[in-house]
Amino acid sequence: MHDVMDSPPQNLVLGKTERVIKKATNRRLYDYRRCSYIKFTDFPSIVRETPEVLVIERTSNRDITHNVFHQVVSSFEFDVPTPAFTQGFLKQLLSLEQWVPRGLLATFLEQAIWYYIGQLEYSGRPLVHPIDPAVLAEHYLKRWSAREGEIIGFLEDSDAQAPAPEAG
Image 1 (cartoon, rainbow, N blue to C red):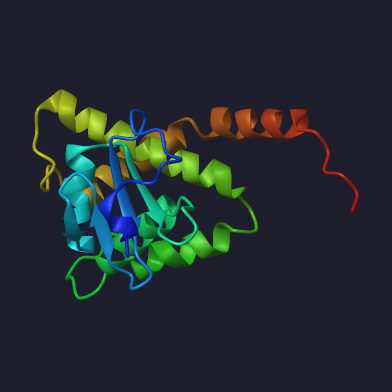
Image 2 (image 1 turned 180 degrees about the horizontal axis):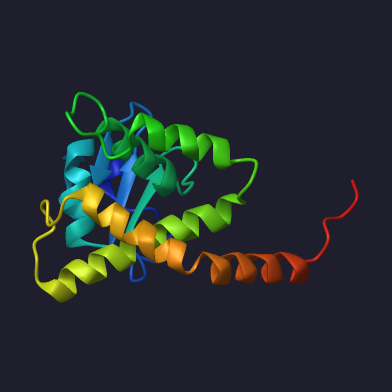
């Protein structure tokens, strides 16, 4: 019997995806570049090596990259002295559900992280504890507060220009 893990899925354009990982029914992950099974703990180095990663489900060939990345990030939150997502942050994130569209929040957080990484690269500082997070957060809060009126005006203008939701 031919094991699906032996070859990449035929319906994928491998030139566009640098790294294909397949998730088997037994929850194991197979990396076609390494030609071996990998663990969640391998993902940070895989993503650093190859930004374009595609994780597909073995039985359906469905793209499950987002779900697997979410599981990986969540798995790193256990038993660490300083989690990336504090309980306070997660509580605020859950409470924002009713106020902020998911796409807007996701885009905002993603852009904030890219901006932060860009600043670190520009400064030449390493990514390992380059600055006290509380100091950085205070700095960004001051910048946000100074431009709060402009930001709220932009959001209100954007909201006014948005099409009205369809009556259901």
